[in-house]
Length: 289
Ligand code: ADP
Ligand code: ZN
Image 1 (tube, rainbow, N blue to C red):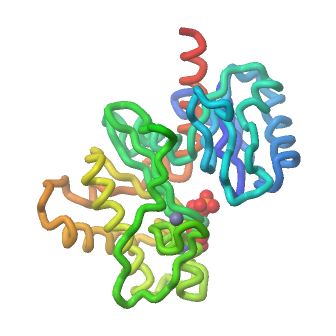
Image 2: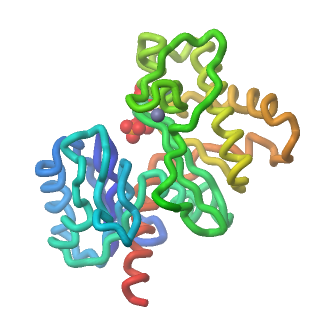
């Protein structure tokens, strides 16, 4: 049996299941402080005979196996979790292999293996929620360099009518600062869910996301682009992206029909936890080599 953790800034999802994506049991735990949240995580997994654990975590995290702080959550704005040795904590208790990657890389792996990009050797998974992040599978591998990508913080051109200052504590008006859920809420004075009838809100959202997608597509050329996260529940955002992206790209590169190319997660809200099960499976296989 495999164990999986989707560690988010608001909640942790823990599950046990297998590499075909079958989830036998799962629980949700609020993300408070490590002493409290991790106690419940450990209690959950102690009920099962798990062979390995996969973690898809909020970040930034250290994914470099050569690093002294490999397996840590590093410079997160959530101060209680800063410099938290996530992998070692679990290894000390369960003595099993632990796979560790970002939440969005896990989701990309889930979607590429069992979801909307099943059968393809590349895809890009983007979440637009409390933050914006993306993970990519390229030539069958999770894209990783010096560290993991941080695609939510790229710069975009501001809309001439948009005077909102931006929400990112590091860059103010980067993509996340202008287009994540909290930015929508602050700019328009209400939660996204209450702005359904305000067309201009979702048009502007697509205006920013289309710019980001243009850059991701030009650089990575993924075979499928998957957009998840709470904000993408507004289907109007897809409509706006389908409008703005061709205006920006101007047929410079040929893309498949956009409605089949830029899509919702095939695994719906299970992309991250399913990908974390796959990370667990990979960790187990690597140990057996
Ligand atoms: P998280 O990013 O914390 O994992 P979500 O992906 O659900 O969680 O993102 C939460 C953000 O998405 C919040 O800012 C919330 O206002 C926004 N959001 C959630 N549901 C909707 C919706 N149906 N329409 C618009 N915005 C939404
Ligand atoms: Zn930023």
